[in-house]
Length: 135
Image (tube, helix red, strand yellow):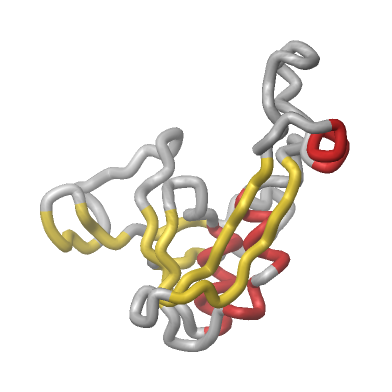
């Protein structure tokens, strides 16, 4: 995006960049219909650190996801809470596994090479009940 004072005010550049040596960063998340090729809803945010990521942007437009929808996303999305929310509305999610999470391909249901159904445990330590979501 253009490096104008107006854009810098609304969408500041990354904190690791020196002033006037970078460009403003805009975060755009779109929910698209793959069968129709249309944008169902979108969210535009500034890249402003914690709480402004893709998951937060998706939460802003989450109401556009309906029963029997399949949400396809990158490896940033597969969290226990997102999968639980998708399951609650009857939707499914297909995501590449997160890089920092270890996946044991000897467990779970094998679907193909490097492809299987895994379970996530509720990470809340204060929870007395262990909850598991299978996706």
